[in-house]
Image (cartoon, rainbow, N blue to C red; front, side):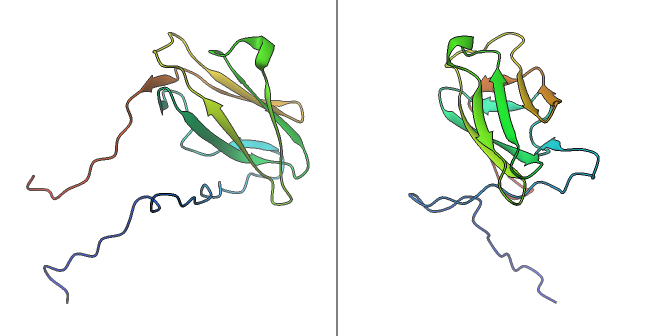
Length: 131
């Protein structure tokens, strides 16, 4: 076979390019709201940046996002699920860690809550097993 051969795959687009987030798994028929699996309790978001939050809802539904760290006078963020049910938000994250931070996504009478959201420096490392 191909012993000793390595094929590299880029992890992110080249500077200036944008790629859409991966499609979330299709939700069961009874569920009309689902966040992408990466958004679960204990998620770490890059501090002092704009994070993308996405998921799946019933096509055409209004979806709202309510972060605990943003004043309620400027919230909630609102989006409309597309024909394929996908929605996306661009959420500003704080510069400092907020104790007990969470956010709620609501649509069609359902709520998805992500608890214990942490903020910090997020990086992806890679290498060989002998490093």
